[in-house]
Image 1 (cartoon, rainbow, N blue to C red):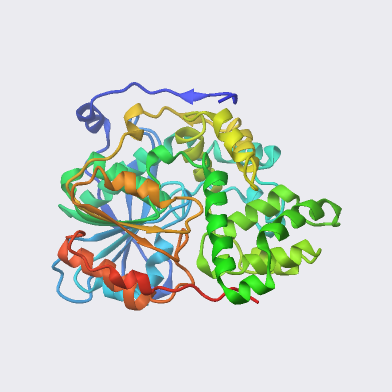
Image 2: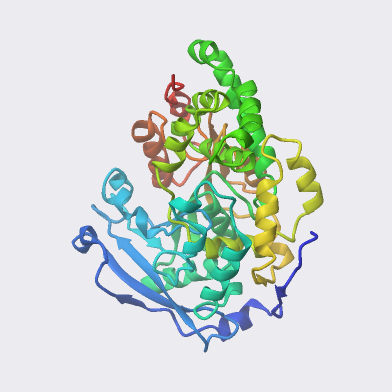
Length: 462
């Protein structure tokens, strides 16, 4: 990598010594739930952990924790939910488990922890990098990244917000709540944390459901453009196989026309920003099936359908500083940047994402990452791995490689899903019952997953 490296190095000490340096036994401290709907149904509190476990006497972080109790007899280990990003708070998922996902709680507690740097766990927010005004601007403006780092430096050591710290935090919460073993359910970057937890504490995990697997060796955004191009071709092939879509659109040529036309349109996004937004629309079937329509209009100079999709839905509340702390330390600098950029420039998405993120990481402090962080994880726990055949960011072959090292693991693929399954049919009648059944049995290999074939996407927008 050509970018400047400012790695923060720490000595590699034995785990026993690391534990000795850490704070006393973690303790759960009850507090009033922030959301009124949680007050009668949840136990809310904090678990304090050292920000830097090598120097535990310094700053501490109060991890925000929500525990949703079992609704019936508690016969299963607690389920720890781990969200993705990196940079998404997990306690926001409480609403799902209180509503549509209440069946997950029938025989077990659900534990939601805002990962350090997100939500109410000393969030590393960067207002300079988000909001509606930034939606169609180039990502990570250097001046804004610099302002964010300057604002966060007094409240956080930005080298202490990586995956391994999150793994230690999860185990601290487990200890504080008095659980001997647990189950895990994780999505996207959350699977990175889950896999590293399995590596560190294999005897503490009974079962894990990993969706859209991002192993540590994936090093995003190294392959974003290449994987996105692969998924886009599959989407366009589906359009060609659909009579109505084929008769209405020519998405391949429309994309090319739109990229050529954009520089002539007043106030429109740059071709690079437009392409990156199209890539992000492929994450879920609900928006992916609108892409041919969006490209058709954009090729004619009409960006209103594009604006409607990228602006009306808002933006997930990421803690951008936490995202940079993770990816600048664990991704950028650990792969062949020149090779990745060359491959990206052969796609419609180009090396925009790589270039912008490398520039941001030039200004961000970086932590030392041990080489074994990227090694395949081997564990005997039951692991159900769920992939989307149209995933534009974590392709199924990554999951297949992860599964190869897990003797009690199994990969299943949803043919019509992307990175997430929003918009597919059968989520409540197939997907959720399947995952719940897996946790009830603790056996991925015997699971009947045939219903996944019946999950269908919405029609292409006309």
